[in-house]
Length: 101
Image 1 (cartoon, rainbow, N blue to C red):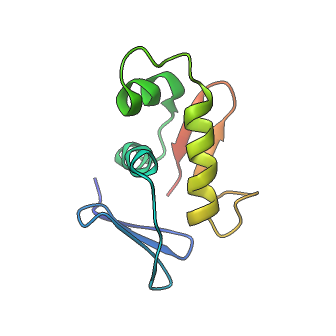
Image 2 (image 1 turned 180 degrees about the vertical axis):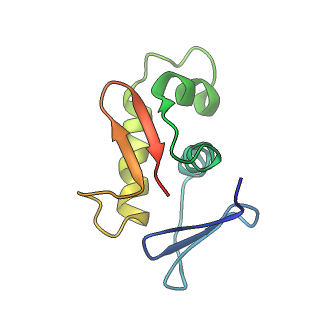
């Protein structure tokens, strides 16, 4: 897994837990960090919503399908150049999410 990743203008350093947008720090919530880390660990691969719910929020939270959708929208607003047309943080409707390098 890469330690540093660029998404649009943002430089993500997973080891340091930092995100910079043209040098300006971007504040991510703990859930957003966890979601981003999981997606970055599997570049180009579909990660199912149920898997994300279990890994981030724990077993028994599988019915809260809006959680990943909500946090993915926040990540896009903070990291994508055009959140309405994301290039890197993608949703596959009814299936899951993927990080496209």
